[in-house]
Image (cartoon, rainbow, N blue to C red; front, side, top):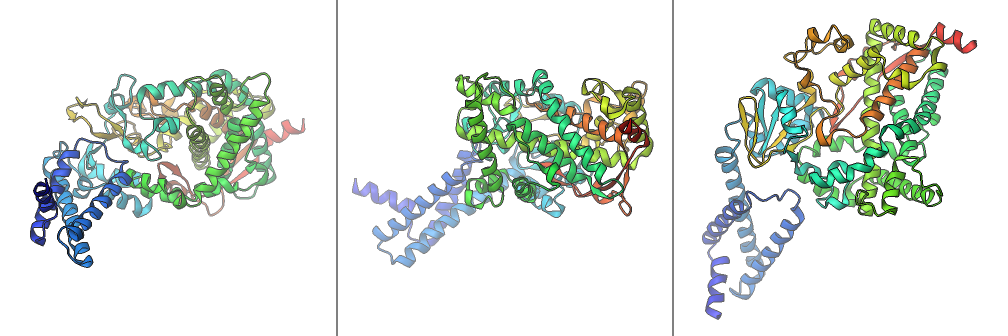
Length: 573
């Protein structure tokens, strides 16, 4: 037994440095080959712990078996560790470049080797969507943008990756908070069946009856927005901020029954400001999902985002207290639907406190930043295209001859030009520009003439595909009429290329609420005001300066509101 033990030690802790380097380089290669088909993206800490333990055991072996001095023992075990990592790195690099199933797809060498190449692209100007566009211009419709990632800009890929019949699933990017499906929010649940189960209370919370109940809240916040713009008419206002004030206030009230009061204060709430302060970090680290997961697990390093987390957790607790005193047990806000499910032991409800808190952050950020950013862009396009703005006002004047006081969303939602304005804005400025990653099933996916191998991460960037001349005539121009009868055939070449809210089982659950907010806000502002770009504002910085931080983050846009004579007359009457 003792001889066998010495043999093992001799093999695993050779005394000759050259032998040690060779043995552990081979072990590194073997380790790579053994884990090649294993998902280890979120196992950083486990792997680091194993590596550290093995290093310490090696050091102990050199001390106890070979009786080396402490410094020399540490040097030998460190040599073994470095050799292991060298063998691992060389094996990974050679495999990814020359033997990987995606080796035949074109793309930059750096992207084939590591996601850090994408992080470098994202760090250039924090506009990964534009860098991705450049890659497609250089390499074509199918570009290898990561060791096992393909970016595709073919309309047929949308249905293949996102349709109801698709077998593609969410990638490890969605496990950056936690891989435990019972502890995460709806958007980051990767298990298809569990996602379908957990989505049910969300569907109820954003269903037709709920939206009808939320409408007075939406209109009351827009009342305040109109009042604030009226008090500032003739003066440049940063419409980017004001649109976010509106959407965050609406979501605070709808989600928890409590507004952030940004419209009243004309200032960003502290919790929202700290959260937005982390968006630049997201723009960089989201390109390397496993690194984002590592940073996220270090609570003390989450920076100012921690204040937003604390605020949302506090709102959850306050909503719970209100719900417990609710004798009718009829949900009045989004979170009440979740709390009702928990109280009734509904398997569709969040299973843990962590999941409940994660859902709170999701409902606030996902439904506010995206809608607010889109509204700011609607204002930009209308202020820059006065003919389109007048046409919209004409449609609204005809629908609401008594002005804003007669506004009804139930009527406004069917107005064709209003709908076309929103739709065209979403085409040009999709809220999630670079797409959402999906993993192909083992048998792979066929996209036109190209077969995408199994276990491949595929992304379809809306920013590129929705602005492609092959899909839309005059694709870079704001032309709301392209969505109207009689124009679609001439201006839309491939309607499949439009998917700003995604589609299939993972489609945006808040789509109808977003449309309700956007159509109401745009219509009522147009009924009350004429709008123009402020003196000295050409909109170029706004149009070209958005940060791709998973969702778009837009720079300031200064516009001027002027009371319409028609609106003033109706107000006086």
